[in-house]
Length: 303
Image (cartoon, rainbow, N blue to C red; front, top):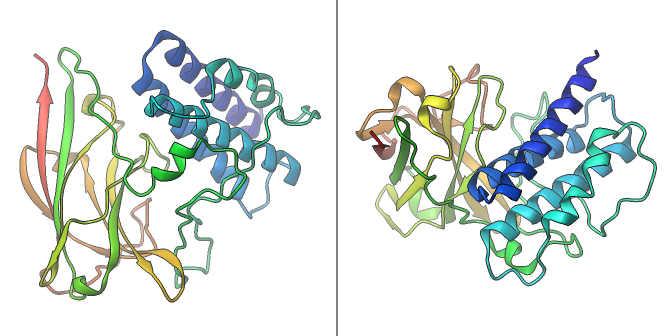
């Protein structure tokens, strides 16, 4: 079996897992699966490298990801005006299962959504652009368009013997803190290959600025039990702010926390230069000054 066929099998299995959770009423788990799969499909759809997929197939994958995001948004907002139903999503299963042979029109009038642009080789000095709003006509319910930034999720249900982690983002130290417009932090959980293990969450815009600090004072609930995170997992924090002259949101720096650093209590972690290195291979400190990301961890264990 070729690598691409294995990938398609994994996508199909993830889709079935998400729709099963959805039909069982396990909404947090369903959202988790939908968002992880959506990002994987979007990554393939946006890839500029040589690919096993044609441009038309990539467009289909992008539309599929849009539908996953729409269903996820419907589950998170009980007042969605244009709900995307589970029955609608299930109609897409033959497409993800048979992407190479699918030759019919996509059943829903949606478009791939431009997400965070990924950096290719040689692009290290480019700004990381972030599209904060879905494109007009992309087929999203109105409520979904207001989720970014500020997409924090509730804590998962407790399970006996399992630990959940709450990270309070207290503040970040930057020499030009006062100049940052609409700053927020994107939190993601990645494996050693840089693949998302959890839904990505954005904090609301920071509450205040003071000298060289930007204060957030916000809790982020990690969307997986700690014992279920694979070896080599890291939690990433990307600091982003708006640049009015260039009219896009830019990643200024990032920080990360590895598994052995998960301990109750306060922690300060170093800041690194962009672009975000999810594989943790080429790290450069942002500054030699004592400026850090200040966090506080709380572990919840149901004995």
